[in-house]
Image (cartoon, rainbow, N blue to C red; front, side, top):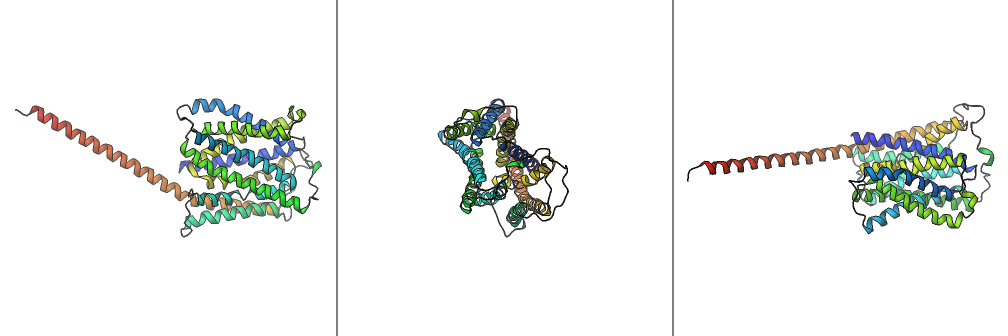
Length: 368
């Protein structure tokens, strides 16, 4: 049970980190941060940060990399970084940040379906806890949609009269055509499916290769190479690669350390202990944290819809965690039973050894 609580705390921290990244991306986008340059730099930073830790911590865990495992880690980089990030930001270009936020919260449903198909998640809707997993997932997704699309009256006044940072000089015009909206929505949905597939594949990789930090380092290496290849075609202007002490550099460093390095590793660790569905169900929490940060930084006002949506997100999350608690109870019981069997076997072996020794001693003492 301690692992469950630790995993919950870790995933909440990850979503707070993602929320901070979204705020910085809003600011950096106004400074013309090129997404292809951004992807390359952030993965390079993540690689440099994690490499010394992976060398020291995983030195006794690393096993020889087979061709099959190398291909799987390469696919992790494609699914979780290259495809996911590029399609997501391309979708925002054709739609808006609001639409992207709404669609990004269907990840738990995609992950849930994939996990069931690959037999990574056992669901028995006839039981209370099994039904709670399904119901909690639906409620969590519904709450995120309410949070995004239903505004309602303002719930609070702006914390500051003027925003600390003004990012609304280039707001969405709202004049994009219907075809662009459909195209952008399709890109975002595909990106979320790619992220769900990353969660599923990560489960199989961590089962075969226990060095989780090394997995993250190799993923960053492959992601850098893949993003660099795309940048050769879409970011040829040398001016885009020049960095200064501004919001762009802060966003790159923050995202490289907190998201690509710490975030990827923590999610890999949580997946290895709790599965992909557990990890994905925390995604809607990011909406709540972004709203809180925006209220302080951009002086945005919260709506009634935000409060209602947040309530359903937390309620759905609680139901899923309550359903997953049974899995941990069963796992703990199995570990205790296995430990008990091992202890019993050791005791029996010890008793048999003593009997053999006593028999040998009697044989030696008895006269011929």
